View 1 (tube, rainbow over the protein chains, first blue to last red):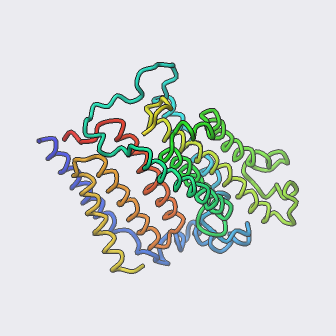
View 2 (view 1 turned 135 degrees about the vertical axis):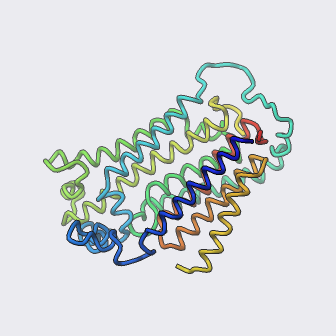
View 3 (view 1 turned 90 degrees about the horizontal axis):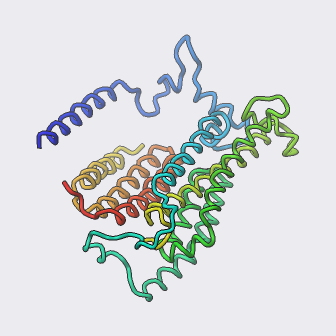
Length: 267
Length: 81
């Protein structure tokens, strides 16, 4: 009880300090704030540069994607590595690799049976609906990935949706059946392939003596007229790499978490 | 930025957060947490950050809820405190 009072007191004090700090922030959309106007007599504004020059530099209308995948390419690459690391960590902690014939998930909670759907007639309706829905989700996810630099979207969102379609199949049907289509060796391999696509696209400019992730040098490879379109195409490639990694890791997390790392049984 | 819309979402956000913390059934807490994520997604979209809203809708309200539910079903359903 004492610990609870102490915890709520510290939360309240931290919240009050944070609220007090917020009053010092510039207003929402204030054109005079340092990110928008730059520091007077100091650094010019970064966001103004992006807003004014992104389309000229990269021919990408979605400034957010251009900043993520091009101007700040390092950040996005290592964000993808972070996701891969999370997947590997879950694999390392949960995955049971020895072959034991013990029941997959001994359940101490008797109240659990009230939320598991049993009976074949439920399975048929839910399974058929989800089998019809999954390809539609995947097509929309591919659109989100491929259209990420023209409209909201991109590799992370599309990858999560692709992973979610496999999770849906595993939830509605059986995990075993889904694993025959997207097996463990497949998704672990694809998680690394995504990073390799990203880093490989970043390494290619170094071949011709430019910087890492300086996509403008790839205009010869993509056979584009100027460097701008090469940057645009490279962004698509990078997004595909991110999507492949995120999709694999999302499904890997679900498969390991829902079966206690045995990849048998399922929810 | 519409102020009334903002206030309504923020009130629901606080209510959802309190419910998610106080409810004993962890499965229900996971669902309320999903609602919380979706409300934040609405807030992002309303402030014009559509890309972030998209990410929040897929990751925060979608996949993370599935992962939490999968974990809850493999542990105990009731919170101990």
